[in-house]
Length: 239
Image (tube, rainbow, N blue to C red; front, side, top):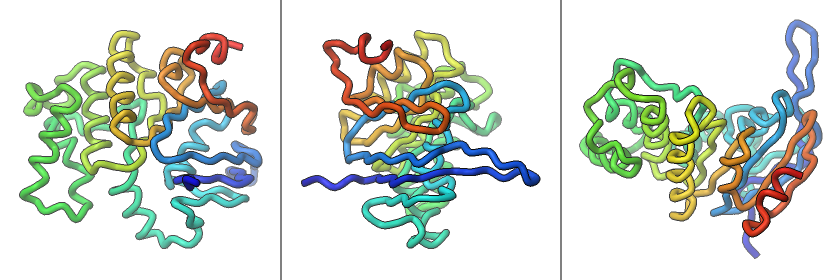
């Protein structure tokens, strides 16, 4: 039987700011298997991004157990977690997080600066990643010279330059028009078809349609975790 690549067991997250405690996640349990495309939906403040940050090893749960490839994250050192984030995981965020004055290639190469990839191979890998997202002709442009859709393509290329096992996408189309958003989702879908595990946080129904599985959060709790029936997708998402 296939083992999950990620597993959360009754994880909770409580933020304490100046003595005021806010619970962002409540006893969430889930498993994600290699090659899945999972969409996480819910209203603002439901815990979507908190859950993604914990799954992406950017944060730790306050309570419960979270495992990556069968090993509790508490058993990893901070250096080991940083290594996994850099070489095994890719991240795409709504705000792009690019260096505005750096070129497309320079932005894509950033994760390679902290990897074991030899310097003479970094340019080749960055060029291949740029080509994979349709930016071959724009590699010398700075990020500030690109459209919103092109910037998000750069962010995706940066996320996949190390060929990660899992790509976490947090509202990747939130700042884009529907046409550009559809193009971005087509790229993410193709990455899934090539074997990458995708975890997508979104509030937009049309982006969640690409997923094979839907997790709904409400007030920090997982309300639904369902397989998506592509033949009846609108019913599944809108009910």
